Length: 439
Ligand SMILES: Cc1ncc(COP(=O)(O)O)c(C=O)c1O
Image (cartoon, rainbow, N blue to C red):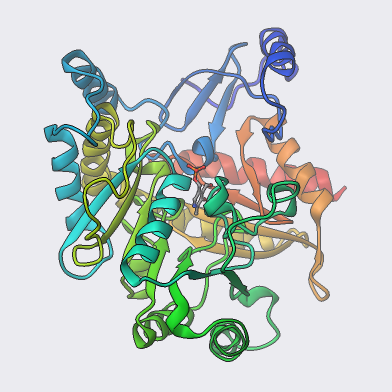
């Protein structure tokens, strides 16, 4: 499949008809930035229902880790479905779930023995982590970070603080959640170390002094690289400091690797870039190449709740587990390395474009989790919100799928199979799109 190749006006006639029906029958709460109606795909290429092809730098929101439809994943799904589709791991046993838990124990950034709880999504992984943290510590409160995204169900939503529209009208939310600033070095006046210290001291000297005693805090929940909030990479000292602070007070450190995990950053988990481990690690999105699966991994001694304490009928569905087992193998054998290699190539390309386009304020990220923050003025760092939105549209018209992150950043989160030559096409078209918007 050649891509990008745009043959019709967008949306084409077939896409238009489907979008009209969607407006009549589907919840209007979804945010669709542009009218893409997928028909099929291959690797990092997506074809729409009118035969237009696109280069995919969104991956179904950082999910399609091995591509849109990797043949080995498809075969594993088909083979498992032919045997049995569901048996509920909450009441019965099946081997794919046990094998996956064993595989996860060998890769997650948790020191020592690990147990895994199986759900269906990122938000369910957060819910499980919250319940487990309260259960294990017998403490009620939780610390999270401004700009974070941990899900939209009523427990996780109390942590999520990415955009106010996600919370508006749904309160009151779960009490006992305190938010600290996430360290954004680009927007901090001072060094990376000072930026890390400002966030840590907000927890240490404000939250834990004025709002809640440390022995009332069950967990600190953090994204090792903040995703929806803008693809923000914190200083290593911040995560290392959090690790020390939580250990000092018997607070569990919950790493939300839902977006940053499963090879996306050029290592299996983002925490590896910072040399830290968590007590609990949440994974979803890329874990099963697109099948619904969300897992909460924890230190074995922490995951000690009794039968009946927590479960989900569909959680750890055998077909999803079969897809995850193959996904982990493909990531280990090829695609984590590819994410590191092609990610560096792409990041270097963005840095080169920053020499040409004043709109680019910051280029950041690891592997194929890359953010480009757009500003109106490099000195004042005024956020180029409309320009960012216009660049997303200009890229779509050119046949590249990207998404925004935070208020004025663009995220590039392609399938981890993206080739260097596809990355070059993305860079060429991004150059064009930036020129168009700047004009
Ligand atoms: C870091 C992080 N945690 C949790 C979630 C929630 O995942 P889900 O949409 O599968 O509930 C997301 C989704 O974007 C995420 O990025």
